[in-house]
Structure formats: structure tokens, C-alpha cells
Image 1 (spheres, rainbow, N blue to C red):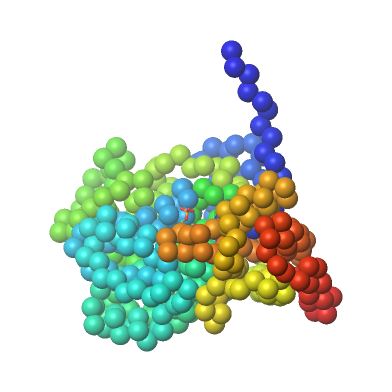
Image 2 (image 1 turned 120 degrees about the horizontal axis):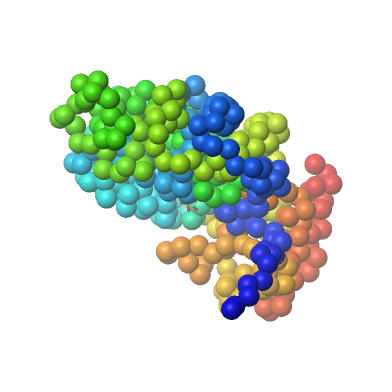
Length: 411
Ligand SMILES: Cc1ncc(COP(=O)(O)O)c(C=O)c1O
């Protein structure tokens, strides 16, 4: 019989735009004994998780809870629950994850209208609001932080335009939540999705979402309770003109009854993952949101100082750069994939390439959550310099670390 070795993953310095290193306190939380999902001790943890999510999303919405699945399950849950077949949906695209929104909305039966921006830039808010007034969609879906290009779309003003024509605004904040301010209520966002494996430093597997009453009214029209749980009174409340939500697993109208006081049975909650999220959120709020955002800006700046001192060129419009993702143009003649594998093999450091038109043209370095530290920035710069030298890239040896040390010393 084949004998398998004991599991022993190598320690890594993960400097990608996700997943990143999990906070050790989160990993410890995941190893605690399992509680039953309706055990009052556990439902209390669920309520605390909801409270902390409201703080993280800067919202007073009643509904703030995680969907079980990776971030795209949160996106899909929101879109499939809010889009009825035939609804017009506007998606401004400025990278790979805008295309993902289109892909999911199309499968929900939406009539899609897109607008596209060159990868590496974002839209003027005025272009988006103009498109909203021209096309009058029922829903606008947009990415806040586009990890494929490292750009962040300003959102202020889009929510107002949506309200004027009674459209819902849905935002993918998977990569930005926990690393920079995301003002759900102030920016009039109706539904928003966060990611755990990026700036929250919780492993992948949950997708925190929050949505307001405007969104809830739309999805409750489509609510259908499962036959085996149904009460006769439930039938009376059905709006038979609406199309039921196509997904069962990702049906937010049922999920909110599970997360709310009704505690209606749906899926079997991954209680260990909720421990992880609760601990991750606790750690974030203990650090302080403003302090955490400042830490992301600080190490982003340090990283850029080092990369520029090495003679590397940063990719993309600097005025809309995400503070937690830095993109570098791969110098001509350098094999980007060989550099990445050498970093991983010899230094245990992981950085990313990109997708679509940027594949093979840029590297992406993440400074997210627990991975966003002085130690990681300095180690990454030192390792990158030596690997680039190995590949024959001519650079001022030692300059990157000296410049970055100076930055840290003079702060
Ligand atoms: C901006 C953005 N949206 C959505 C996703 C999809 O998330 P997941 O892979 O967790 O499903 C990602 C993942 O990298 C992302 O960066």
C-alpha cells in the first residue's frame, strides 16, 4: 500500500495579490473544536461576525454576513439573487474581474451593456454616470480594486446616479476590503462583496457580503422557501409575477433567513471557517481600520522606492494605483516566469504574473494584510535584485535596499 508523507507545507512569503499569508491567530482559531451550527455558542459567534463585518464595510445595513465559497461565490450570490432574466445590467470593465462580472451576469440572463477602459487605467466617474443615464440599467456592477491591473476605480458619484434612475449599485471590493477605506453607506453602494484571502489574511473559502433595504426589497420579491421547510403562511407572501432565484445554494433570500433570527436551515455552515473570519475581523478591528490602511500605504510606498531604485518601471496610471498591488513592467529580454520560479524555489517568495493582454508583460506584487510588512518588503526586494542580476539584468546593485532602508529609517 502506498504510504503518504505527513502534510508539511513549506513556509512561504506570499507577495501576490491573493491568497496571502494567513494571520497565525486565524490559523490557530481554525484548529479549535467544531461547534454545531445551531449551538447557541456558535450562533453568538455568527452574530459577532455580522457586527464586525458592518464595521469593516462601514455600514449600518442589517445584512452583513459571509457566503460559503470563495469570493466569486459572493459575487455570484449577489448577482443571481438581484438580476432577473431580461434585466439590463451595465458593467464598466477595466481588467479581468470586470469581465468576470459580465460572465456571471450573462449567466443570470441579464441583457449586458459594457464599457471598456484600457488595462492600466480607470474610468472618469462622469463617463460612468453618463452611461448610466443613457442606458438606464436596472443594476450597475463594477470592480473597486482590479487586481489584474493594480488599479482602483473611484466610486463617489456612481451611487447617486444609480439612485436617480432606481438602479442598484453592486461593487466587487474583494481585493480592497481591509486594506483601504471602503465606504459602503457613504458611497451609496447597494450590495458589496469582500474577499477573505487578501487584505483580511483569512484563508480563501468565505465571501463576506452586505446589502441594503433597496437590494433586499428586490430579492424578497423572488423569495421561495424550500418545500421541506415551508409554512402555509409563506405561500401567501409570494409574488408569483417574479422569477424565482435560479440558484439554491447562492440564494441570498434564504441565506439571510439562516443568518437572521429565523435561523432557517439552509447549508451546513463551515463553523471552522467562521472561527477564522471572526478572528481575522477581531484582529483587524484591534489594529484599527485607519492604522491598517496606513500600514498598507506605508509598505506600498517602501516597495515602490526599492523597485524604482532598482531601475524597474512600474506599470499603469499612478493616479489610480491600488495601495495593495504594485505592477512592474517585465524588462525586455527577461523571462518573467523564470524570475518568478527562481524567487519561489530559492527564496520561498511568491509573486504573480497577470492575465489576458498583460500575461507575460507584468509582474504583480501584493502587499496585503499579514503579508504587508517591512520584513517581507525588504526580503522581496533583496531576493528580486539577486534573481534579476542572475538573469543578466543590469541594475545598480544594492541601491534598492539602501533606498528602502533610508525610507524606513527616515519615516
Ligand atoms: C478583484 C477580484 N474579484 C474577484 C476575485 C475572485 O475571487 P476568488 O478567486 O476568491 O473566487 C478576485 C480573485 O483574485 C479578485 O482579485
